[in-house]
Image 1 (tube, rainbow, N blue to C red):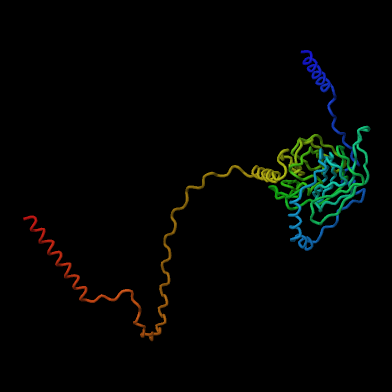
Image 2: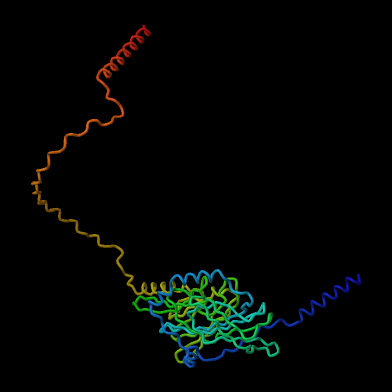
Length: 395
């Protein structure tokens, strides 16, 4: 009994110590590299997107080589040396120029020591630089951890390879930062794209929406774009003050950051894949927070239809006139021309060949008249005999 009592006392002491220990605090967020709006930051640093390529050059590039790289890419998964634990995504679309700027912070846990990070990112995105920070438990903050640089890949490779000066230590926490990048809003309803709709007054309105499923988040910002890789997302959208930003998570705040720009901040999502993230920027306030992406266009169409239906007159007659004229003219003209031409050509050729072959093969030989007459006589005699027998039976 003493031994069991001592064991129970040790267990109770351990449970009390565990409950008294403070819960692990989440890692602090690293402050942004600049408080300026991304559009002003790009102008200040002289960061500009490359010029658009001619359509002929784009058509030549989109040939079999693109399909080959696309197939090879989807047969290869990302390495599992690092996993994301949190994202901070800031996007600044410009619906007038059809461009957008962005920045992304990816907090990482290192599972295996490595000096290379591989993730997803569209080759259409232009990056200014990439930075790597390491978490210091003593200082409770992230500090710079050497230099990081991009490894160039193929023109149609949707992966980003970042080589690091210092090797990442397993079990440590790091921050991979893309402080400024930019691209053009797409037109193929994939990734971060530009679209438009027409209202009942035939005015065209533009909007910027997202469609990240099944694997298109990489066309908007750098991420680990795989369904099995999940992490919370913090989304901030910088947009024109006359526009409204919506996402599939509740909005926290909206602040004016300049004379023409506003910043809308959304709540952090639950851990999820990057393909489930969505937002839309438009001048319509009838879009619900959970109807973004492909549903945004249908909502805007419904809004335009409702607006046009409310402005139409409703006092339309439901029953047409009943006093329709019945005295329709029946004296249809009967003097139709009957003088059809009868002078048809009669000089048809009459010298048709008469010497047709008579020795045509027949399946059965013709029956002679004697055979036909004999058969008739036989049938007649049988009838007479049958009648005589019937007479004798009934006598």
